[in-house]
Image 1 (tube, rainbow, N blue to C red):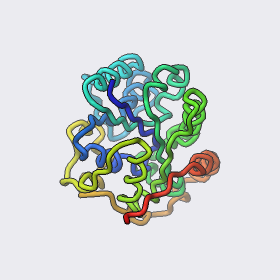
Image 2 (image 1 turned 45 degrees about the horizontal axis):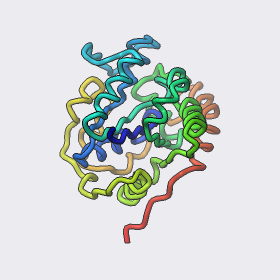
Image 3 (image 1 turned 30 degrees about the horizontal axis):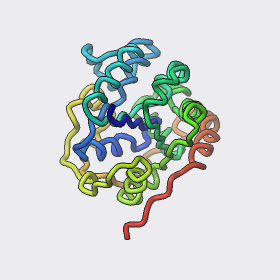
Image 4 (image 1 turned 45 degrees about the vertical axis):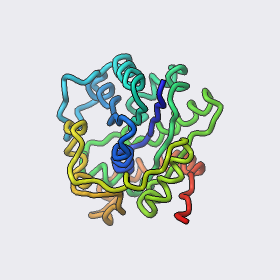
Length: 248
């Protein structure tokens, strides 16, 4: 069986930029949020804005799990996904957790929450994502006996090469500097959520996000409550942050 690497993230964490770099390596299949279909389509949690449902995609937990494992039969796989889509189910699937290598990406919620709100004003507390991330982090560590790798989006933006070098080393992968640059546009597999990735579609590499536009956490009264709820989980995850490696 080939390696199966998961990047567990939360929305607006620069996770798609990291996923794009892993895609550019050329030696791994990449799967873009397969469990999104479980949460928003199969479970019908809510209607997600900017999401064009592809009826050909698997939607149940079992079908998505099978698709991922089948892909890993023929080549290494990198999966970017959100814990809140699936934490209530994957917590009980120890065999699947042991089969994957889980890693985590976090970003300061003072930046991620306003970014999400600008694209989806009806965002829920659960969708902010850090609480579910921390639950998965704890459960994965309990099952595997290992502390998962955690990287911070600020490091990724400030030092893409150093952060990716450290990340690849922790995973036992060769660092490929050429993967840090790509042509404009989005991969075909992201068409159903292209409305969430306008900035990335116009990019040619990992770059610092633009300065926040607008009132930030003061854009709506409940955003401060969301921030205060999720901040402790962000801090607990970031305490395990993997430092970027020197370029020397």
